[in-house]
Image 1 (tube, each protein chain N blue to C red):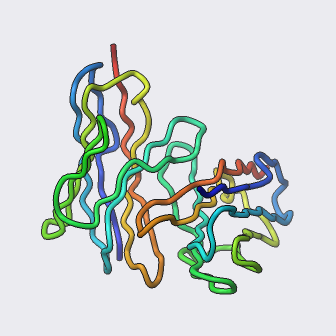
Image 2 (cartoon, rainbow over the protein chains, first blue to last red):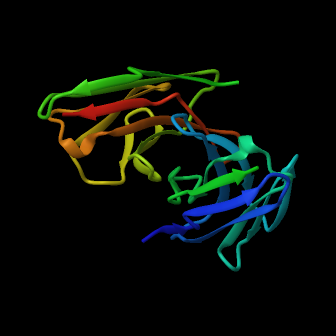
Length: 111
Length: 112
């Protein structure tokens, strides 16, 4: 089977740093991506890691360790608008195209 | 850049009625296409995905079906809706070298 695990909720204050972890078990692995979804909206892409290491995009960074089947999303200088749900997703194979999501982490940023 | 048109945006259907959700993609060719369903407050459940015309992979056995009659058209259907089919349906296409899904605005289905 295939599964992804991430915490259901995280709370942090404005200006802080928060890390959202994701562990996965999949039969195939091509890369790990992260998405943000605000209430009522569609998910939007944040980052993608195909190789081990850290990818940085502005205030957001994403890390992958293929040997540990683990990744995380790091959000710095939190803002109120960062309150949303965050999903990790595994792209299992470029041949089959299968891409599955975790259950999501709800981030609440407090003043 | 690609654009995804998904319709209808909202619909309320009685149990046992048929369903057809349509999704068309612009700005890319031969994309991987996906249908996801999201229940309120939950994650995205992969329903179907397609790597080409007429090629459909199903993830979850259920009363839904999908078709890809053209390269950039993906259709989700049901002959008889169940209460459990209620949810937020999202069409998406894969862009770039992998991993980056671009979503449509979604179709919110309520089955009564």
